[in-house]
Image (cartoon, helix red, strand yellow):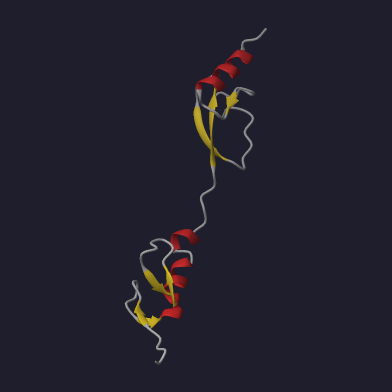
Length: 107
């Protein structure tokens, strides 16, 4: 008996390749794709190549209730609206607001 290589059709491109050149698709293990389609898929897409937007931090002034965003790299010490220092908080949940409000009204 002769040992023949079997050719399998790629699920993505439709070309036929030897079984040694085929792999299971990691996103859908039921499909078998050729190595070139697998390499093409693993390269980052245009959206992934674009730079990520800088992260913003949400600030809240306890004194004047002003809410604003700033880049994470910017250090903010006073409220841009009322100008008070030490009245800003980065968390807007109820517990953090109560803590900062309690510190503000201590004698």
